[in-house]
Image (tube, rainbow, N blue to C red; front, side):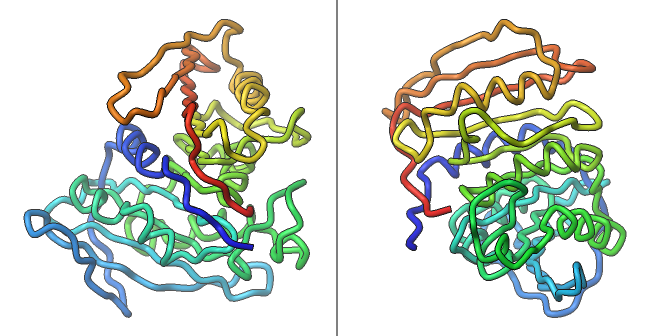
Length: 277
């Protein structure tokens, strides 16, 4: 199956920046390669690594910002690719590394099993069919890279495209203790959502879905799902953004969720493209 990259990846990244305003010291690493970005911003470093998880060797790409911009403690954006994709492709299509260099946070790009993720109750991907536990993998990965590279993995912002976005939804339910917020892109839950969700604490949520995306009709049910999980008030505030991108964007926001956490959801009335998983 082929994947067409969603057009709304960039807006997701920009709003992620508002969530991750913290920082840390650069860690030492081997197999490093420079990241080429605009000359006005110092280049950070890409580190390729691996850990053992579920009797498998799992790999990842970690981007560390330069010492001149790195925040302390260093916040982390977790970025999960779609299916079929790779960690390198996710880095290239999102341009998150360049944004991280300018703002001092790290970006973690894990690699899925056979270019896919296993989502509890989700699609029959190669990872799902192989019985891979990707929630456990992400948890172990955060526990590994945090102390090794002096990263703050207790307040991660997680984003993902399509199959990666569905896993991000599952992480919001299962790994809330690690998360500050989640930004699923082109990953509306089925209607009605079948997964159970009892996060240990409220998680900020930014959902980005195009009306022409697969299963976009379930978008209201996805919002209601997270409203219940985060214990938000029943009334939502809906507003329309300035149409600077000629995309007719609308925002629905719920505040004072759970223990003061706020939720914000965004829907594009144009298509973000289609993805296989």
